[in-house]
Image (cartoon, rainbow, N blue to C red; front, top):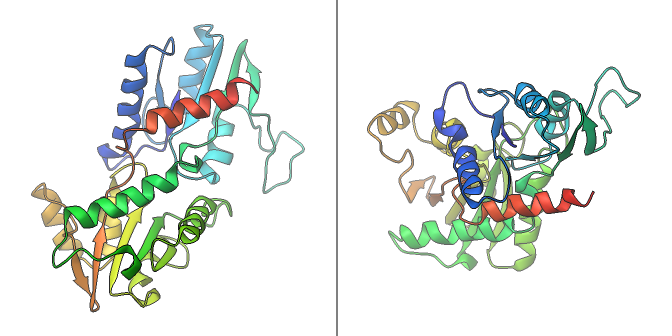
Length: 280
């Protein structure tokens, strides 16, 4: 069972999860591959209840998310019935639960998010290289002359939500490929809108570390980067990209990539997450 946020305002939010489910289902590795969402149907709790009622022996639940934050460590475990917040002895701000539990005769394996898999570093760097090569105007700068920004959502609800972003930035810095590497966030400092002032480089590349090209990546982040809401709305209505690559702002050229949900090797990441929990 692949679990994602979903959205009440953007149908594209769940598209990558559905695509991944279709790919895995076609491979015939599992008896069934289903999806469940927090904000769309089928909801997480009823989806698992249906599998338990069908007497499925084992269910592997894989979060199609970037980080281990409030959604993966609180919302999903509670909706699965792995964590009973308020009915256990855990601290008020953190619940400790077993990732493998018997629920109604079904063995539920709760896997780690795909976004924390080690291969994500290559995914992010690949996205950054691809966008500059695809849109080289006025010229394609070398990474050694470029600042790379990895953008995340950020939240005050869980201190771990930004860790996946910061970990990737540190790994990228160690490789020494880019002149600079920074983490920026929508709802936490350092903010996405401040990327221009954060770098001494004239060339910037921003990769949104999100699964789906949904509301945040297609509408919110272009506005945070300096496009007017009206321009973004007009381009969206016309079926055009909401950010032109590259765009000059504040005397700097900025390239902005797609989210990572269409990466071809993500099914392999899901299978790896399942293998990790299969032996637990």
